[in-house]
Structures are given as C-alpha cells and as structure tokens.
Length: 468
Image (tube, rainbow, N blue to C red; front, side):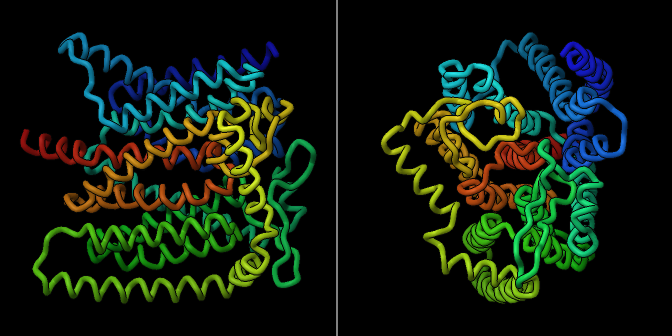
C-alpha cells in the first residue's frame, strides 16, 4: 500500500507540475491533449500489463495521468478565479443549468455521506464527478479559432485510428491475440464478449477503449461530428467527411451494441429536427429546396445504414432481439429496476449498486444489480437525484437548441450539433448500459457539452480578439 501511495504521488507531482506550468499560459492545449489521449488510456494499461515488467501499483499510478491533468487544470482555473475576484469583487453569474448542476452534486454528496459503506460511496461519487470536471474546464478555457479547428481535425484522426484498430480486431484477431494484448480481466476472462453471428462465434471488438459498448458510443459521436462537418464545412472538406461518417457508423454496427444503435437512431432524429426546425430565417423558396435536400439526404443515409446493418449481420441480430423483446435481459432488468424504485424511491445507497468498474466497488457487497446508468443514478442518489440530473441535461440541451441557429463558424456549429445529438443518443444508451463511469467516453461527452453551452462566449472572444 505504501508503494502504491508513493508511485501515485510521484506521478501527481511530476506530471502535475509539468501540466500546471504548461496550463498556466496555454490551458486549452493541455485540455485538448487530455481529450485526444484519453481514448487510448485503456490500451496503454493493457500494454503495460501484458508487455512490461511494471508492478500493478505503477501501472495504476501511471493510468491516473488523465485525472492529474484535470487536477492541474483545475488548480489553474481556481487561481484565475481568485485573481479575477480579487480584482473585481464579483462572483461569476450562474445560469439555471448551473443551479441544477449544483443541486445534483449536493444530492450526490448527501447520499455519499449517508451510504452504508462510506468508502464505496465516495469511490462511486468520484467516478461520476471526476469526468464532470471536464465540463467546467471546457466552459472556462476558451480556444482560439485555430485551436478549435486543429482539435477537431486531430480528433478525427484519433477516431480514425480507433476505427482502424477496431477493423483489425474484427478481421484479424483471434482469442489468443486478445489475450496476448492484455484484453483480460482479473479473473482471466476476455473483456471482449463473444456472441453468435450467423452461427459463428464473434468476438465483439473493443478497439482502444474499455469495451464494445463504450466503443459503440464513441463511434456514434465521431459519426455525428463528421455528419455535422458535412453540413457545416466548406466543399473541400465535405467530400472526405461524408464517407468518414459512414465508416464510423460501420464502426458502431460492428460492435453489435443494440443500445448504442438505438441511441444512434435517436441521435439521427435529433439531427433532422435540429436542421428542419432550427434553421436560420431564409426565403420560402430556399427553405423549400433545403427541406427537399434534407429529405433526400436522410433517405440516402437510411439506405446506407440499412445496408451496413444487413452486411455486418447486425440487422439479423436486431430483428432477433425484437422477436424476443420481452425476454431480453436488459428489458427485464430495466422493468425490475423501475418496479423497485417505485417502492423504494430513495434507492439503496451510493456505491451499493453493481456493476461498477472500480476494484473497491467490485469487492463491495452490492444491494442491487442494474445495468443502465440512469437506473444506477436513481438507485444511488434516489429518484429525486435522477430528476435533478435529467433537469440539468434538459436545460443544457434546451440551450443548445436555442443557440444553434445563430452560430456562424463551421467548427462551432460542429461542436454544438454534435453535443446536442450526441448527448441525446448517449442518454438513450445509458438507459440500458452502465457507461457513465467509463472515463474516456465521459471525458468526450462532458467536453463537448461544456464547449457547446459556451458557444456564444467563444465566438464573442474571437470577435474581441479580431477587433483588438
């Protein structure tokens, strides 16, 4: 235990010190580095476990680099806030979504203090709140126009690497290779589950992240970002982004994550609603032509999606699911959780729900098992806690809906659109999947949401810099 503490402290002081110095002058590049590198965190852990002689204590310490970056950025932000307050004696103005978030966090803290197992409760709360810090940081550290454009391009490249790695696993890996690369849990079982596709065993790919379901939602976000790039970017980019969006949809399909595909459908509908009902004011003829073009584009996307699902075998898997819907585990799991919450609206206590990924929580005797993250929130923070979180997300999405038409810059439009539709798709998936404590996914989601809700301020800072 002592070695574990010393190794972690070493990483905190060395990496944290470097990050703090770098972030003091250029905070957004440090935040961008976090966003770009975090999808490869799980792969690096597997590599260290399988291919190096590092002790588990050092592997765990190094794997915390993502939170060390967050901690360094948070210290820089706190120092800046104190400096501004000392100069102006004014507190930051809070919106409705800020008050809702504060209330949700307070409820989480109260339920943690009341947990039957304080250590498990604190660990579970930390799993929710650590990635949430990225939402605050993304709102505070505003990029220049070139920084945001560069980030989106490099993020697309990172997503392409994830997709290529996934395709390599699908078409080139065997169970032996998964084991050699360290894709096993502490009991020696594959973290990549095996299913039957057209009568043959199929290992669901995980790429560089924790599992196939997280990968599916990552691919969903990348597909949406590419699609909004097609709608917002200039012609020279559209020809490349359109096929990339289709390939990322293929990446989602190859995971065979039914919940993510359901989320993809919900996200697609939100894109259509956003474009049709939130376009800027135009002459009637132009609006009519745009509507026809949008319908045609939606039809093409539907045909391509249907073809991808059919070719990969995912369509057969989905049809089989609908035929036995009432017997599906996730459906029964959700129904039972709903019944329990109706009788026990206070839930079972923070840290008392499984499955969770943290070792402390895995070794804690849970009081309830439910897969969906939204049900887990209700079980841990009570029905009122879930209501506050849903109200917060609703306030954020309502803000994005309102500010979408006024965005002039293509990069900002991509961020706002992807955050809006991506969170809708993710929340649908969270009904059935326990993904809200998946580090890389939640860092992406919170970063997008934080940037998007500050879209007005970001564009205003660009105008001020240009005027100056």
